[in-house]
Length: 317
Image (cartoon, rainbow, N blue to C red; front, side, top):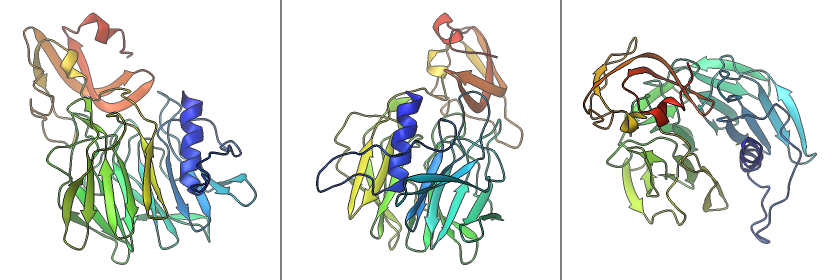
């Protein structure tokens, strides 16, 4: 499963691997680094780039690779300065950008990559650390939004101006928060859709107009509801594929017991609504820590108390 996901991510990052005229896929050279989950990818000019991610429960990675479709070759480039997984990436005017994600803790740092000098430079922090967000660029501006703070999805949306190195909050994405969504731009509009909302996969699809700072709901995604999919655009059309319902960060819908919710350092105390109103009878405490399930490390909360056996079987401490 990891190998197939990695191959598809590589192909979409380069962008032009698929032939729209023939509607065919052609396998290219394997990614140059180790196989991984939750990497980021973007293109600059005629080259594709993939980096960061995780081996699955072993912390974040920071290696960074360039793909040349003319030669079908991968070349390792300068490492991203901070290891991370579940981050976002996009490009603006010949520069690449990577930010947010997690590595035991939520990250909000933001880095600019210059392919001419093969170097990274830190830029203004993204307002609010998060994981599983989406990012894309429209014209000379970059955008990051949605994602998870470990206790459910968020729907805030931010615009980055590289000329001034500043972030400006824009209209929220839809009525509810989501994570594991997909996002891309077509022309002068941005698009976000699918993802996980209240622990369930969704298929709604939204268009962003930066000129008016407005979101308009469009036709639902044609496939089944899902999170963790991939999306990109080619020649005025958008494409979404793969994904599934892999896991749910809140997890608490399968826990019985009254909860004591304790804030993580530097973060506000989560509300019962954010934990999807999982309060039942018994006693459950939620503490700062790392929750692991199916080999996936999530900067979240440590759970103890009256935990259902089927959930306990999925947890490793």
